[in-house]
Image 1 (tube, rainbow over the protein chains, first blue to last red):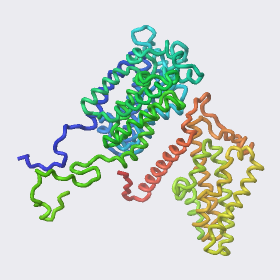
Image 2 (cartoon, rainbow over the protein chains, first blue to last red):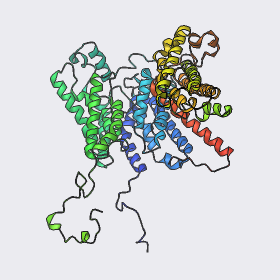
Image 3 (tube, rainbow over the protein chains, first blue to last red):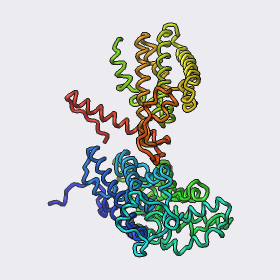
Image 4 (tube, each protein chain N blue to C red):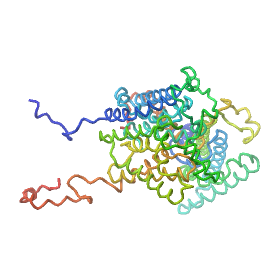
Amino acid sequence: MNLNRLAGAPHAHDRDSVPRLMSAVLLAILPATLYGLFLFGWPAFNLLAITVLVGLACEAGCLWLAGRPVRTGVKDGSALLTGMLLALSLPPWAPWWIGAIGAAFAVVVGKQVFGGTGQNIFNPAMLARVMLLVSFPVEMTTWLTPHPWWSGTSPGWLEGWLITLGHFSATDGVTGATILGYARTELGMNHSLSQILPGHYQAGAAALGWTGGSLGETAEWLVLLGGLWLLRRRVITWPIPAGMLGAVLVLAGAFHLLDPQRFADPGLHLLSGSLMLGAFFIATDPVTSPVAPLGQIVFGIGCGVLVYAIRTWGGYPEGVAFAVVLMNAATPLIDHYIRPRAYGRTWRGQPRPVPARAKQPPLVQRSGVDARD
Amino acid sequence: MNDYRGIFADGLWNNNVVFTQMLALCPLMAVTTTATNGLGMGLATTGVLLTSNIVIAILRDFVAQEVRIPVFVLLIASLVTLADMAINAWLHELYKVLGLFIPLIVVNCSVLGRAESFASKQPVLASAADGLAMGLGYTLALTVIGGCREIVGSATLFAHASLLLGDGFAFLETTLIKDYHGFLLMLLPPGGFLVLGFLLAGKRVIERVTETSGVKEEFHCSVQ
């Protein structure tokens, strides 16, 4: 009889594992990715492929160096997801070496140096994006106006490879600032928002994703859809996205009410840049976010406040990557002060009082065994 | 104590100031944006280490045990001031680049460290050898780290060497890639930490390989 076979706890679980988690997230991000590929054509596809392949190769190399099982490590999909998220946060027509250096940095310095999957302090993809933005500001801020595959302006396969290999001269009309970058420059010249926004920003187009921006961040509604599906599948939980989006919403709303000419409305903040992607797919990384739900809310609010502060007063037009990396650094602190309540205990760690009707003669204590064990 | 081979092996490799003792990292992160800066800073520190070790080894019998640290610090400070003025006078361009970090050799922990752990207990000649070896080891580390950061960060090697160190060093200047975009991160402090980390890992690997091949012995060094 096999019934008495010994097995360690937990005895009831729904067979979650790293590969399942990763494939669920990959599936959720797929619609936004496909939309980005349609919007920006072959060069975007090449960049995505190169980033993911370099990420996988670096993962395999590091695992081999460390003497760990290479095949299972690569197949768990964490490097695939890292490469994917990094590529989605890059400008779609960036040259190949941006993706390659970024993916190598993300996997080697961002993750494997700390001890591999599950050990990293910072979100690898966002760490690499910050590194790229600091090191290569020109390549990382050359944004495109949409060139969908069916429109005829999209480059062909060969031309796409030329762009990926770096033979791409940025010309006006092909490139254009993102709305956040444009608004920031114009605000710097003391123009008011009512002069800036008309003609450059339509809420509908922004929500549908018909704007310039990173490869996977333009289609807000597809990202949101993927995120909600992940929430439903309980791959991620609500505190971080709610905290992050809520903080941006509240701050943007309050400042917009104070001075509508200087501070953009909350809709623009929510529908542009990579806020949705960050809130649902990046900040929710279970490795680099706090454990307790309350801590996750603090983490999410911190991310949101930082995003709004960087967008409004910081040196860069977009700050999701910086915000997430900064809050990653604060995660151990949050975890130290806000701990989850252990089952059967109060928040202070004392045993919970037993309800009156469940009280029984204190058999256990008389027998000398500590009831709390 | 006439093991000069051992002293030099210690200073350059086994007990290297940077790669083993992990001392003097502040000037290291600050100045090693090019190999030239690293070389200049390393040589200045070597000069101070050598002279301070000699002076302290000479005076070690006259210094009471209770006041040795203030005395050593005073001696080192005088020597650093001398080095500071000398570099300002003869290598003014280098002085302008290294700036504050020359006077800060005073608080370079490796200098007082060698005085305390070696020169105050050993004869003059051995102390001089130790100072020279440690200084050269530090110079080596600074130059290698500076070289790595410079190659990756700006695709040159020993840029401005003739300007900073004198015309005799002009042959060192090389440009590896023309029209290089630059990899800014490597020139910023994080680049210093990254390069140092990878070089440390590299040194450990080399030591592990030589140890396992030299001494036929199972050597486990797994982190897990």
